[in-house]
Length: 338
Image (tube, rainbow, N blue to C red):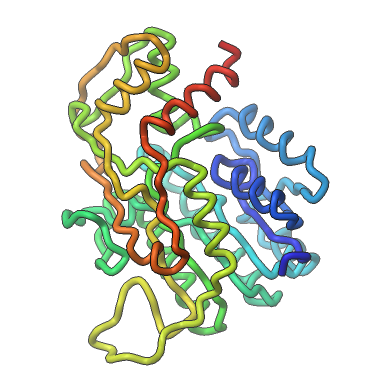
């Protein structure tokens, strides 16, 4: 499959940009698609795209995944053997304000991806899920073998829906599909709506940074290079489906169909107050903190059990938060021309 094009949806996004770069470095041809929406500053998306477009094997198409006709034409033209689906309407808090965007992008858009894979011989679909699917679960660390039927935001519900939709296509049409539950990804070229970017920007500007739950939130911050390494390794590990077992002992992480789910996290949750200390040190400024109560749809802690990932690909995310924050700030200063 090395000489055939790989589709990366959301290629102008944070994770999509990094994965497209990594695939190109492997010598693969990459077709990137993105609708360049204005959920956050399109200038950052355009800057990522310019880096990708400078490489020989990269082609880009601006299109909306919810556009059924355009998606059918895309898949019919390229018949992608591998699809890495990362495009989505992101953000828990924004889903409280604009729920329709999540159904259009995350449900309708994903259906068009599944249909494209179904009719055009896709050999492996990898798709982004999220740690938010664990919702009201309180047992830590979060395991892919746990039930995740109680999402606490529409964003989380849309990601759980993606997992279920992919399973149905795997079962009905034998479409190999791998779901990727990402845990708080950060690093260079990160999204400006995420904590690391918001905090760094606020600290440098001397503006108050909002700390929900009094800053006692804990997140399994996962450095972007670790995410990229895991996804690229999984791309070559096509699920086969496990043998028939007792239906009373179904594993939520795998199936008789060629479908499976992995956590991709650092396996090391960090309290937000410590992340701010690291940012203060790297930026040479003291943060002005505004302590606030918990937001609707938020959870207090995320913590990934990654045993299944380690067993499958022999890889465990290992970037220390101290090193990752330093690399992020180095990029942030350069990007902001500070």
